[in-house]
Image 1 (cartoon, helix red, strand yellow):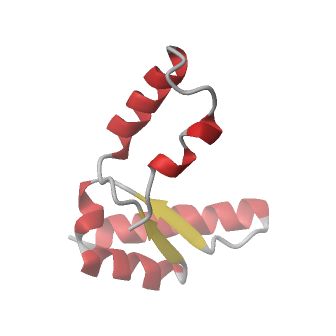
Image 2: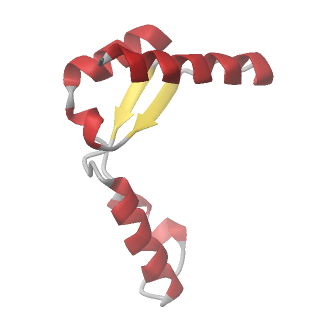
Length: 88
């Protein structure tokens, strides 16, 4: 069960490589499944790529908060918030 999403992601990455001619060498991940170290190692092995996991697992919520903050001018630009998303 853990291999299925990894294999599907690998299929997508291979299709992207075929279409673009550029090898996928790293993949940024977030979400609940990314806390599973075994699964992230499987993904890395299948793709032969580096997996970049963010500290914030539910990055979608953070993205919404950042978008709202930018809209109300809490932050002036994306550059002001780049350092808010930390890598694990």
